[in-house]
Length: 157
Image (cartoon, rainbow, N blue to C red; front, side, top):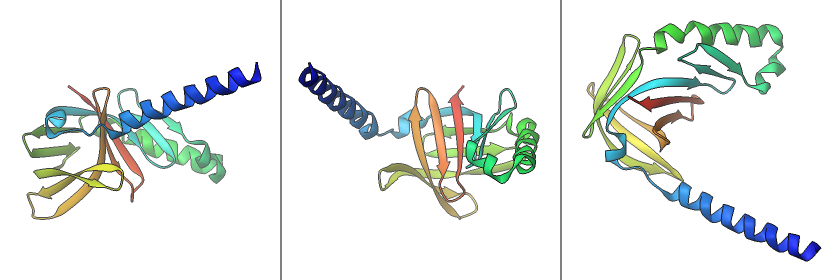
């Protein structure tokens, strides 16, 4: 009986491993990025803001700062809600435009990679460049800035 469970666990783990590996190895293409994407979630290292509802979820690690700091973080995040409700990214061919409140970044891009992550390598209209990790899954575009520890999640509209 023990041997049967052990074998079943190994088979389950092998199937799960290969399933996850196949999901991880699927790279997005430029075609997958096309269209307009509306911001739905803004996440930092300590908190996440649901832009549609204005609800803030504080990560348990933020509670180590104490309730006063966690409350300040929550209030700060909530104050971004109205500004972020109109934030979007629009991609047409290899051209992009990102709008957050009154800040607009536009330019061209190519797809690249950084370790195990896919990246968007942007050349902005002002001549500056930037690189951002991204993932497309379930009609959502996740842009991750690891140095700033921020993630912007968009849904296709």
